[in-house]
Image 1 (cartoon, rainbow, N blue to C red):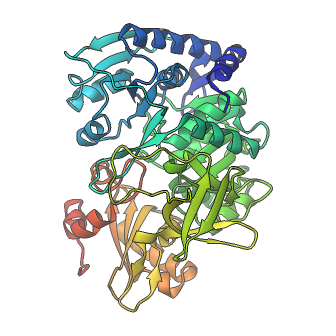
Image 2: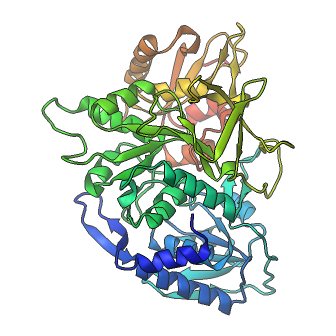
Length: 520
């Protein structure tokens, strides 16, 4: 990544180009377009408004906004102004938001963010600078008494990650670390990939900031944003199946997909008539990246046969996002690729993946048992079990703490079983249990209109064909997806709260309209 002055020059140089755009979902029409020049001017005015409030470089500032040009302008203002940015997901509960913003006294917010801060009861605890929808506008809407800004830090972002109790803790991202990550990732990206990037997941995720905002800017590309008020993938009310329509409309050159969206794309390819043509339309062959959880190997191979290769990777906020990924020249399905040029990896004696790089984080805002330590030799202990083959490709086997040991002494990594089960036609998500039990059981999460018995039948048949006996659930239980269910039992990044689900399974499935005969 260029330094701050280089990035300022870059934004000015790109001023004639059009970025970002807000595309309509159905027909691909564009609701609004902003140039790099617009965003540069807008971010400059935000910095002036911050200065009027007495905020100086090093001040920690929250960003509470949806995936719109307002978020991008706010982010650039803070990045170029030397502030410490704390992006807050709109999907957070009030308790989670309050935890992440505990030391923050100033927030930038769009209309949705202003409403959320009020809903969370935080509008009286922080100064709120509202970012208007037109470029260059802003207004102060709340000013609590006794504003005290934190001292300067050599940190540019604090990114949320899950803690032990569901309250998030912050990962401190260094300026030089993000710079190293961007330079390294860009060096292995094919030319032209970021010319039309389609953003499908929240900007509060660091990987989306990297791929949707910074890499398109560095490469002079544009980002295509979904219509306002659209439920982004992984948030309440979203449907992975919608990704097909969005990609047809947006005609992107690249996108990052959660594993559920890869499964949805695979299902669309499998269900399309033989003479239907390309599933995304003629000439639409985006560069697809995936991560966050295992992606089914057979789904990858089917999509590759349809001209839609998925490049699976691996990363974590503690490394400023990406550690490894499959490139077009070095693509090996079933792995998360080889390390980026700036990263080293090795395995500990117990098979844990260790990472050393120039993009490692600077610690957490709060330490707890989920913290990932960096040892005295500079190796980050990721908490993930892995294999590294003779050619350097990494295969993630699952979380060390998530390994299921059955009463027969068999070790099972639930993430791989869950990734495979998502290929079932009506399954949106899956969570596997079996610690200390004789056989595995799987909770299948489906679309609201799915037939539970048919889902069970399909899952049994799929498991018989595709899963080893040791990885095959014996019993399947079905719950219809809903906002309340997601909010309570999944993190904002889409990871299941396994213990909560296990503890509450009997109550959950009854409360959400399904009876359960599982004996725990």
